[in-house]
Image (tube, rainbow, N blue to C red; front, side, top):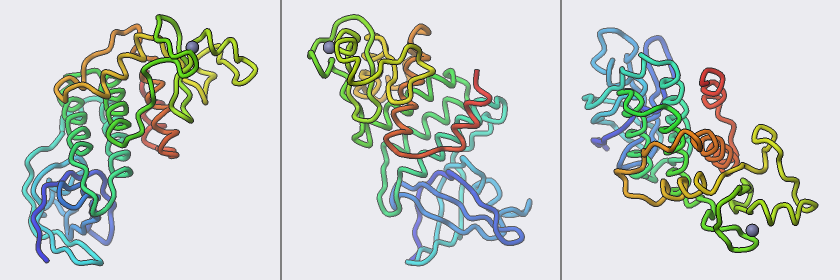
Length: 259
Ligand SMILES: [Zn+2]
C-alpha cells in the first residue's frame, strides 16, 4: 500500500553504504520505521527530508513488515538548532522522549504538535531552553494522563503559601507542616539536590506547573518567574523520567552542558 503522511524525523540510524532508517512520527500512523535508500548521498532527493528534525510530507510503500520511502518534500527544517549547543541537546532529548511515548499505529497529534512547537521555539531562540524544557515535560505528562495531583496537600487538603514536597512515585504533594508531622514516615529532603523520591516546590511553582498542564495551547510556553524556574525544571524532569521509567541518554548529555 502506498501512503502519504505528514511526519517528523525524530531519529535516524545509518545502515548499508548510503542508506538510513528514519524514526518518523506521523499524524496518521504514529511511529514508523522508514527505510530511506541512498539518503546519505549528497545527491539524494531525500537528503534534506531524511535529516533528523525535518518535518514534511512522506510518500511511503507500507507493508506489514516494512516501510520504504518513495518520495519526500520538506515543510520545515530546524537548522537554527545548530547555532546553540544547549538548544540542540534539548531538541535531541525532546525527540527521543517523543519517539519513546508514541507507539506504532497510535497517532498522538497533541504530543507531536507539542514536540514540534518546542523544537521550533528552540531553533528560533524565541524562548530560553529551560522554559521550553519544563513546558514540554509538564504538558506531556498531562497528555499522557500522568500529571500529578497538585491542587492541594494530600494530607490536610489545604493550599496555603509555603513549601510542598512532590512525591514523584505517586504524584501527590504534601505541605511542609504535614511533612514535618510525619517525618518518620518519609524523610524530608534538606536540599533539592539530595531528593530523588521527592521534589521541592513552592506554592507558586506548584501552581505554575498546574497552569501549564491545563492552559490553552497558546499559553503553554509562558515564562515562569526566575525565582521558581529551577524548581519546576527539576520537578518536571524527575517526575517524568520516573513515571516513564526511563534513562534518556540525551537528557544526561543535556544536563552536562546546560548551566
Ligand atoms: Zn498539609
